[in-house]
Image 1 (cartoon, one colour):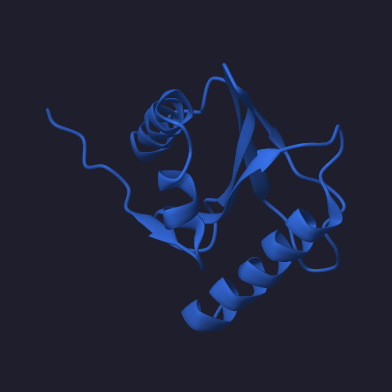
Image 2: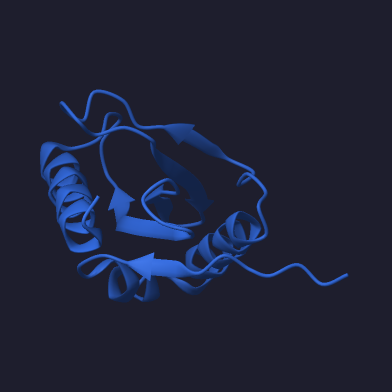
Length: 116
């Protein structure tokens, strides 16, 4: 029996940002997103906490590439698929404030667009 893949919804520039990753990071991110589409957890992920009131269920896929560390922030509870909020190269130990702002702004925009 063939399983239907969950759709991916891209917020803001998240898709073009992911496509700008180096090939190894882009391939790894695609594989992890495909796992999510199949209903499986990514191999390396963690919840993103302390994003603000009313924002929950956001996770990040962690990608370790030859030239750096990359992240894909996503949420699965907003609709019947995966909503990718932000894709970026991580340059600090903790999530940088501009990345947190992008994630929270896009989360709120997705909720408003989906009328949730």
